[in-house]
Image (cartoon, rainbow, N blue to C red; front, side, top):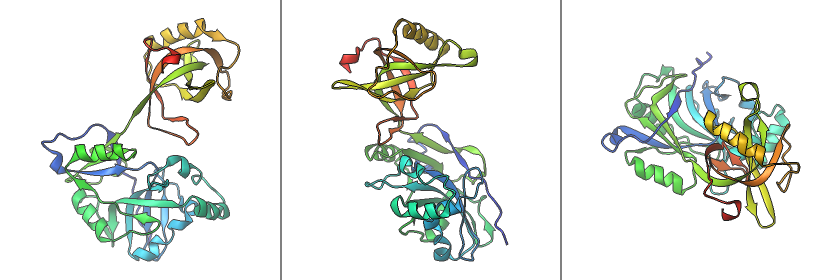
Length: 315
């Protein structure tokens, strides 16, 4: 009998619970990968479904053995990751695996970039729905399955000690923390305040070297800034930033960009972006971002503020 599909419960961005109540919360490492609901019919097979419900089982053939290892009917919640040399989830590595349609290519990629399934919840087990149970009970049932192997694991959650857990993930270079209320039920498809995600955000001072015009109501205004970092002898492109501006900031930037317009790209290598316009690399801004690609590009950058107090040769 086919297992009932369950949409994953989602976390809400927020901050740590207060010290007065943190004993009512568990803290898990926030993984940087692809969310997956894992369906184990009990016949040795495995069906992996993405957050959208798409069947991604064929993309990750190395996870197929989980069904034979467990041998029970279950629906588990987790995250598929690709680990770097330090054992941290690396989304850029995982991207080479995502969306593959060829089974042969998926099998080859599994050898060079193996996937790892991090399990963190159990929502169905042995014909019994678990969504109405408190998180603490579901987690105990999951831990009791003993699912730890080369391609899957069930990392422990820490109860209380939120500040220490957050600092430990920051120091280790991990993406962040997920806080889960011990008494909370599993809410399929809901972005719940019972799960709070905290992502470590980094900042960097960058030099503006160009921009891309906006569209619609942003016609004539910058839709995105093209930014870089200075190095000896040049300006290295590190990405485009198009979020977190107020209308006033956007208008101010438009005037500054127009005054600094030039014909030639100031970056070492020209970014291939349609409609890009170039400026003298003299404006400095602070950008927030989550991490960098191996090529040095900023991931999920957002504008923080202009830094008129800094000159390009002073950062």
